[in-house]
Amino acid sequence: MTRDTRDVIVIGAGAAGLTAAQSVAEHGLSVRLIDEQASAGGQIWRNAAVVTQLGGPLAKSYDGAAAALLGLQDALIDHATSATVLDVALSQSPNTAKDAPVCVTWLSAAHGDRGIRETAARALIIATGALERPVLFPGATLPGVMGVGAVQSMLKQSGLVPTENGVVLAGQGPLLLLTMAQILDHGGSVAAVIDLGQNRLADVVFGLVPALLSDPAIMVQGAALLWRARRSGVIWHRHVTGLRAMGDGGIEQVAFETGGKTVHLPCSLLAVHDGVIANTQLTRLLALDHHWSDTQQAFAARVTPEGRTSAPSVWVAGDGAGIAGAEVARLRGALAGLDVAQALGALAEPDLRTRADPLKKRVARRAPARALIDRLFAPLPVIAFARGEAADSTLVCRCEAVTLARIHEAIRDGATGPNRVKTFTRCGMGACQGRICGNALTRIVAEATQSAPQDAGALRIRPPLKPTLISDYLEVSPKDEPTS
Ligand SMILES: Cc1cc2nc3c(=O)[nH]c(=O)nc-3n(C[C@H](O)[C@H](O)[C@H](O)COP(=O)(O)OP(=O)(O)OC[C@H]3O[C@@H](n4cnc5c(N)ncnc54)[C@H](O)[C@@H]3O)c2cc1C
Image (cartoon, rainbow, N blue to C red; front, side, top):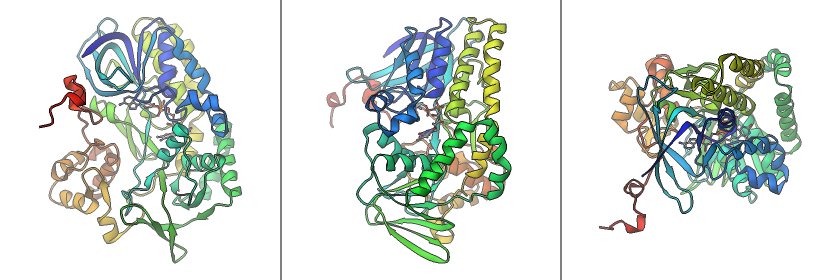
């Protein structure tokens, strides 16, 4: 196993991680930047180098990418691509300024350089972004049903768009509208939109003016997406209940109720979405303090405006500390980087304040716009689309095939928290490590036990964070392994 040491480790090379690494490096500190994608950019600027070079409709949403990626040329930033963090350990070093209390274990899957690595550092910035909120309904695990984010990732990664039969989009949120526009701009087809949102006119009326003043660009972008959707001629189904996907070995049709009628649509690709939530896998692994957001119906690490956490050598920046969008992720990344530089003795306290205060003001200014978005697209109920038997048989944990009924049974048998439910049912014990079901499980337990989600708690996370080959730990190539 290869081991090395840097001043700072940044995990995640999205909007937040890139600016964090840059702010740290410009103060003369060395940075190991680790990201599992093959190139920097995170979700919003996925595959940036190729997309910006090719131009085309996607490139216009990659405006900030070039400047952010330029920062990577700093010789003090060592960017590991195709590199997945599997584990993080913290020693109780009292002196972050001198010692290296952080140790990150990561898997390099880079071509010709595969293997487990360890990097030690004086400070860690976690910028691992967001995950799509799980959308649970009957038939959600059929092949051909996926998250809207996954469809968008395919589009950004390989230019693939659904054309034959089109894609049916179901759910709500800005990413659904954005992906719809991106599919159409690329000559793909959207067969229908099943709108599951419960938009209230009052929210728009009362929140619009402060939101417009706080972040006019994002509001204009939202209005343009709504206009694009309206002009597209795509059939829009509203006031929908009872969504279900049906098919034999893969989705063949989607059904739902609207206006007192049952509608059946032929469908070979259903993309669902209900917003995004903070990715807390690493912050949970480190047992940092978390708080439950009622508006986002999700946990996020508890951080100061500078990204400081409950562990002295760990900072969190970007959507991983609560969903606030790409521009705020960028600002929070810079704030965390500056704060780390100050904590490690590379930036004087007064200089930190001069640099950080304007950034904090810019973050605060955007809050009303975020509040409007959160209210407009308030999360759907956890099992939004089914009742009775259909709800009971809905899979919550797809890795271990655990249904809602099985979770309720475990709760009746005395499992009062997500970790007890996991012991009773294996919910959250599969390959995804609870990334997909964890948020839903907290909400189900809280509802069934009539407790606050903060008290119900969340799944404990164990390393390795992602499924890993034993051969990687043994440092042998899979073909060398004995077969019997
Ligand atoms: C699927 C999806 C698509 C999105 N698309 C858009 C969009 O088109 N436009 C928009 O405005 N917002 C989009 N968002 C919201 C967007 O993520 C944020 O607003 C913004 O990009 C957040 O920046 P960030 O740096 O916090 O996180 P991200 O940009 O998500 O970057 C996080 C990075 O951490 C890496 N990472 C995570 N875990 C590990 C690990 N264990 N090891 C190594 N690396 C790891 C990821 O590979 C990723 O590159 C999307 C969100 C999701 C979940």
